[in-house]
Image (tube, rainbow over all chains, first blue to last red; front, top):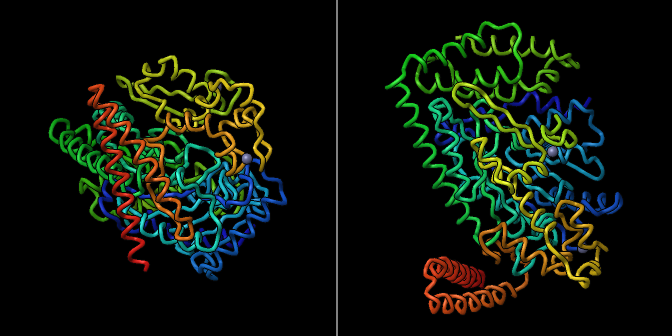
Length: 353
Length: 184
Ligand SMILES: [Zn+2]
Ligand SMILES: [Zn+2]
């Protein structure tokens, strides 16, 4: 039991609940920076003592900077959390599975509004993350750049004049930046155009991943587009390239939805209606079925089929239907069947119109 | 969930695709996925999986396939004690920042395979050394030589790429000058 987790549970998830640019298609924008301390071994080779030293140094720099040290901010030591609480942080997109499994000398700092977080001793000494609703990578960059400068002025970052920020894996060397946007692309999926679209994006040296960011693809027609290369371009150049591609994808998705309405209106309406019916009238729902139906309802909201249903209610359910969220809400460990029952009850309740 | 192919490693790559009304799913570990990718088998699934693996796959295969000289295999990072063998075993991850120097020849090859350039053009901390300018200037002059050579050999496509790089380097140097001026 951790009462900080309960405080988080009671909060709305602002990157899903708040309005953002192009929110009919873009759900959220996220940037993470990988940083390391110059005089320490990377977490993969450091021993427990060194990991604790690093953890303390980063924690006090964060507290000093004021950015993540305010009394309302959160601080979690994964080794002290139980399995369910760790799963909760994962579903909340605040920490990676790799990080939560590590458990020695690790710490997670989270700003009170959850827009920024720092994982200490994940693959790198620092993984700084900022997330905002909708499609607004430039605003995310502005926030994280500032936070990173505050931390960097208090820590001696490992930096090479030629290679930039040095990271545990050479995949991230240079800017250490991975920027991504979560897109909802049901139109392209229904129209059968998603595979060629993804192939096209891959040719541009950008990556496409599924909702959990860890490789799962195509659940709920949610796709995460991110940059691959971190060296040889400045941060604004990388973002410009991503922005151009994502802007095009949004246009393609809008066209796909329009064409579906023109050519095959009843199939689209039927898909949305059945999705809504399932969520509104089921008594047992698996996570996958719920996610795919939420995706269908989300298109319906965009098409104006449910005027009294807010798109942010649907967005928040993307996380609310997670196994750990359901169990924290109930306040106890649930069997798989009990989870399916609670998930259905939650959807029936939230989607009343 | 275990990988469909080796049934040993945890599957981290899950691909789902609608194909003429049927959903096809593949669950692969990164090793098997990059293996299949190399053999060109994955295009059958309709996706270019290589790009869905993070670049990690590419880095580690570039590092794994590196044939080190006897001198290289004997190299030990003075700071963390890691060797090339150890790096290969950790999926291409390094032991400490000093490893970048200790294993520079092998790494520069792997880095070129993955990134769009070989010199950092992004953010620099203010406390960072002024040598950043020197690094950019060295790179700029070597790119200029490269451009001359490419033009002489009439390799215009490559030359255009090189010219873009030169412009980026110039822009980065200009930005550095204006930043410095505004701090004075
Ligand atoms: Zn496998
Ligand atoms: Zn080392």
